[in-house]
Amino acid sequence: MTERDETVSSGLGADRRVDPLAQVRAYWEGLRDEGGIPLRAQINPRGLEAALSSTFLIERVAPGIARFRIAGMDIADVMGMEVRGLPISAMFTPTARPALAKSLEQVFAEPATLALDLIALAGLGRPAMTARLIVLPLLDDAGQSTLALGCIALTGDIGRSPRRFDIGRASVTALVRTDRSRDTPAQRSEFPPQIVAGVAQHAFAEPPKPFDAPSRETAAKSYLRVVK
Image 1 (cartoon, helix red, strand yellow):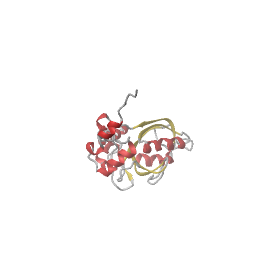
Image 2 (spheres, rainbow, N blue to C red):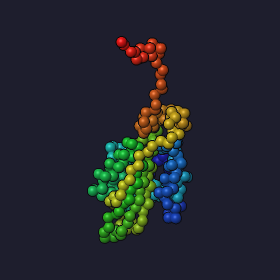
Image 3 (cartoon, rainbow, N blue to C red):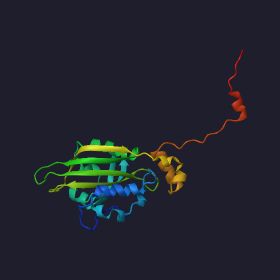
Image 4 (cartoon, one colour):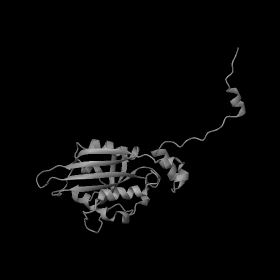
């Protein structure tokens, strides 16, 4: 994705033979450093060519609230307008927004990944439509989890826009490090030290503290003695 915040089109046409969710998830997983979170600067549109029209980037602006910074044409078609700057909650019905807000906050705060099964409200000129959506956390330039890469896969005709969704099922999965990632961040990562520190403090448990052996004087005082 380019650094500009705009609606993005793949320019390749919609290749529905490719599962955009699987491609985006595989690309994001490939950027993870032993269980860490990818940087926003690592995202390259060439790695998402067949899924760009379904892909978006959101930014956390308040607890439970995130706005679109970049969005593919599928999102614009669903809403009937360019969505840059709009909250992602604009795609959801009022009753679904509290649950969405709670799940989004978990994505940024824990951090975690989010998967949603969506059902669009049907009506005149609006045929039955469902969707699947994923949200995957990213680190900003300061090493904080304030951004997320997302993708939506639509099933059915959009019809008259805008279309808004109810949540059929939500799945939030907290991220954990692999066994190999128990080394100190500086030893296991190619990221700059200030970014690594941000990841460790925000996303994971504190690193183990070094063991300081007691002095002879302290050790001597700690012996148990039998008093007759």
